[in-house]
Length: 90
Image (cartoon, rainbow, N blue to C red; front, side):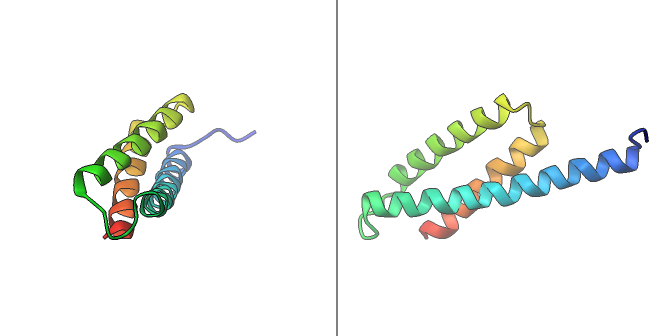
């Protein structure tokens, strides 16, 4: 049995953060589509969009925390989710 090395552990953390970014972006884009369908493309108001996004992020953060994700992983997911949402809405 091989013992984990620093190099392998670092590669694992890097992969987890990249996966969190990818999943966060996907979740943000999906929430944007739900938001546009619920509200309508013409009636988008900034405060309403931010509230929707914050609710999605709170539930996603709670889910990641329950899975004992690293704080860096949660922050990467959070930022990617925000970017995915805002890119898809605007």
